[in-house]
Length: 430
Figure: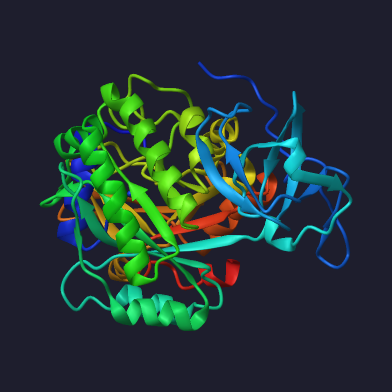
């Protein structure tokens, strides 16, 4: 998405009304290695001299190579890590979940060790959302694809300006996930009534007490209901709150990592720092990277309902978004968003449609979709009541094209927004 607050609200309104929401850098080589020094063996495990095993009973992984730096997580004896850098008595390491930080050298024994293939595990996130009471489409999609989906993310919880978490659990969803061995991440948003609220999130972030309350309530939410971690989806964060957002992630990670919970976030897609942007400027990729186990890039809504017609996520644009993010996140932390929808525009505005809705248009108007060779997405046009309509959308073929980027950069995986609206053929691609 590349849009301002107004367009974010417009997109959300489309979601609520049409049962669908979908949404100063340094130079770096775009061909990133999976993990420095790692070489895959035939038995799907890795051996490398740039590895180590934690020899201390417990050691703190810190954000910087100083004892005063923030603790990212605790590593216990026997944990395998990869060594990225050595500096004045410290190792910069990456653990099996893709989290990077600094540990003191005395706490680790370097050498050739067997590294589990989980270092390279590919994640398939499925975002779970309901458009109305009794909407079962997401649950059906999840239940049919538990052999492919590794993580389910229920879009069910909201935080208010005081840091209080509200929402409802879905016992059937949790039971299905646990039975299938699928991780569950509680999605926490700044939605107030029907829109992402910049006032709510600003008040929350600027108050240390409110941030502390939110962290505490998120921890209790995860503990009491069997979640694997949290997925923060704060949208429309004011640019002026950039340092407070970073502080929130630091405080959240310190608490959740100490309790062995995952900290993940949905991040706005961007191709530059964009500190001026009302949509993405508050997200300081470099500053928040140490605190996230996984970063889910919302690589969609390049074109949206409130703007001109065009691809939801052209492959070249997605490539640029990934290239920028990889300057600050390791490939093992990056999850690429996959749109499961499209938009139809007339001469005034657009509206979102899921895959079945798009197929109904194709049938109704007897059109033959075209394939855009540069953007690698399908599209078509039709005329109704004298008005021309233009449709751009995502399907199994465009998803396959985007998976080429996952392979190109060896990303951690993909995240589908949202379950129940996708082309069923995408599961064969994954």
